[in-house]
Structure formats: structure tokens, C-alpha cells
Image: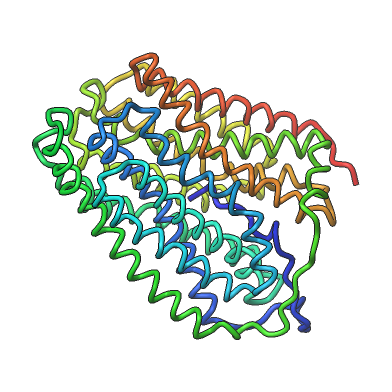
Length: 433
């Protein structure tokens, strides 16, 4: 997804080698690409789970969005302790811890289904997300380390394309498995023991999907463990998180960090609403399973836009491109909310294309000129991803209060408006140092 943090925020790798500490390990490079694919795909599966759990537990929109709250809260809670652990045990062992934590989170869907309790599903998602955060802390700096320093940016961009590929493919498979077998009966028509049995039976499709993921993750963890000593002379710089907090006194950095919070929240909110939005009679009026097949188009827009944007950003000011894309997102929301049918559907999906360059551009503009403090700044931005835990349920609440999903899109639109303002601010402000 576009929302991947630059985990080098928390670690500063260096290995005593002639090429800036980098090592030539093609097999590990492929492994890291695979990790980008996996955690990108797992994150996008939330968009499929939300409508499933909303129906089974007869939730309102705000309650259903707690799926994203449980998932993205891990960035704020696990991020910094996870980074400290990686510094202590190293990249490869840190990746194993992350993968095993993800495996445990997947397996927790079993008792969640057996007890048919929404809170247990949220707990399982939090554990799963904790593992995702651990893996992300490892992957970005590790992909930079595995090869010549001069091509590090190229490798990272290529790896992030695998992340986007995961966000496109996982919802396709997950939508078919999780939403494709929804029973004709509805939870709201049942009560008592019949309702409990229905929930247990229907959540089995979710359980089976995540058990399959657990098996795959365990195999990958075993492979990584076998390569735990592949990196030699691994070192990490030590810095206090309190040092990073001082950077919030700089207007440009503080504004940028706030925009990361808003961007992730807006991106996740829109993606989370696609299935329910497309089920509306005024939009497409399709089934949940059919609506889920459109999710890859949203994340696919980010994949295409990332490659196109990398070329555009060489010729046009990044700050101006950011402002234009944010304004484009607002216009697409206005069009979607005030039209119907395919126009309303595709204008919403095209927001993914606008999102494509936002995270890396906001990140680079915010951290520009920080010098040696860039790592601390990136750490703060990593925590700011918690916006994905807060803004989606607020968007859901707006939908409940207004009884309108199109109206609820006003909150993501407001987020994009502030991001556009940051683009204008960054284009006019000069970086000190």
C-alpha cells in the first residue's frame, strides 16, 4: 500500500564494507520483496473483512471501522518497542519475530470464530498488525542494505511496487473466499442460539483464509531463520525517541507529520467503504462479493501512479504535484458524492491513483533539511500512521449520523484539503540548512 512507513526511521544500518556497508545477497533481496508483497496484501484484506463482520455482528459503520482502529493502533503501540527489539537482535531475527507474531494473529481468528465475538476478532487483528509493524521496521532499511548504496532508492521503489501488487491481488482472492459465500439469511433476522451458530458458521470462511496465511507465514519464518546469520557485522545507531519529539517544534516537519496522519486516515477510510458504497442502489447496487472485486482497482491505481509519478516528480516540483493530487482527490470525492452509477463508482476508485505519490512525497518534504536528525524525524512519522486507526471510525460515525455514505466522504475530503495546503506551504517555504 501507499501507506508504508520508512522504517529506517528506527534503525541506522551500517556494515563495515567498501560500499557504504552494503552487502551483495540476491537471495535475501528476493525474500524482502516477498515480505513487501505479504504485508501489503494482508493490510488490504481489512477492506474485505469489514463488510463481512459488519453484517455478521449487525454493526453500524463506526463500529465496523474499528477493524482499522485495531489494526493501525499497532503502529503507535508496537512501532517504537519493535524498533528497539530489532536494534537488539538484528534484522533477520527481527523479521522472524514479526512473521511469527503475524502467524499467531492469524491463528487467533480460530477462537474468535468459535466464540463468535467481535472483540476477539479485533484482538486477533491487533496481534496480526503488530507482526506487520515488526516486519516493516526490518524491510525498508534491509532492502537499502542489500546491494550497492547508489541504487538503494531504485531497489526500495521496486520493493514498494511488490507491496502494491499485494494490495491488488489479496482482495481479489480474499473477496472470493470471505465474501463469496455469504448466506442468504441475514444476522439481523436471527437471535439467540441461532444467531450464534450462524456467526460461527459464517466466520469459518474468514478463519480458513487466515489459517492458510498462517501456514504460509510460518514457512517463510522458517526460511528466514535459516538465514538468520546472513548479515555480518550488523550495527545500529542508538538515539532517544525524545530527541525526535523536539522536531515537532519545526513548522514544516510538524505540518508534514500531521499530513501523514491525515493521508493514511483518508486512504484507509475510502478503501474501507468501497464494498458498502458500491452496494448502494444509487451507486452499483451489487452484492458484497461483486463489490469486493473493485477493491484491486483502488489499490491498483496506486501501483500505476507510483511508476508514473516517479517520472513526473523528476520534472515537476514534488510539493506542487502533491498539492495537485490532493485537489484531484477532493474533486473526485465531490463527483462521486453527487453522481450515481458507474460515474460515482469509478470516480471513487480513481482516488487511489491520486494517493499514489502522497506518502513518499509528504515524507520527503517533511524530512527535507533535517540532516542527521532525519532518522528521528522518520520515527515520528512512523507513529503518525496511527491516523489509519482514528479517521476511519470517525468517517463511519459521520455515515451513521448522516445516514449517508456519500456524505461521510466529506471527512476524507477535509484531510486532502489540509494535505493540499501543505503542498502549497512546502512549495513556498525554504528549508533551513
